[in-house]
Amino acid sequence: MKHERTDSSSSQWGQVGTSPLHISGRSHVMGRSEFIDDIPKPRNLLYVKILTSPLAHGKISKLNVEKAREMPGVMAVLTAKDIPGENQIGGIIKDEVCLAQEQVHFVGEPVAIVAAETIEEAEAALELIELQLEEEIPVLTIKDAIAKNQYVGPVRKKLKKGMWKQFLQTAQTIWKE
Image 1 (spheres, rainbow, N blue to C red):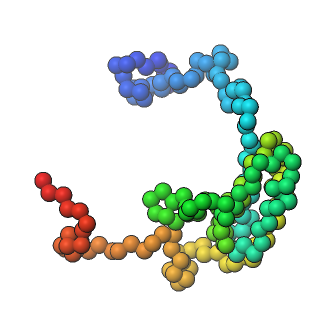
Image 2: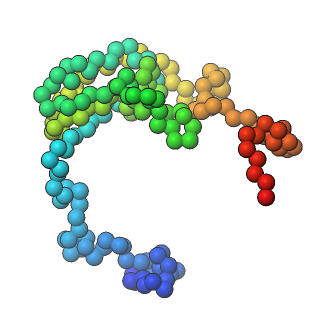
């Protein structure tokens, strides 16, 4: 395959049988690329570590962050209780919490966040957080989810042919051309 410089007359993807040059390829091979570690750190930079669930499903029976909060260099330790307003990050369907509250639903689910002056302080503070979980049986198949009535989001109505009239009558807004 030929490697060719693309110009404004060809698409950004080059032509069949060629591969366009990478946008930062020249700076990479000449040692001039700037990476995140090359950028000076801001004066008030904090390092963040996240305590995550080791279980696929369980009830949070204890979450104590007080020792971590008291540690030198630790600026904040946050749990779901510290989130003002709704603890929700579901973009379209409100089905995902930012930090676990009462239960964990997957391995790696964030439970607490530590912000500290150094990465070592953040890691040490994470070790001081007391998390106790009562393991529950996870739902791992569609069959089990249906049997336990546990769905990822709200159950949506099934649309059938001819139902448009029914929806038109209850619609809040109707656009006509």
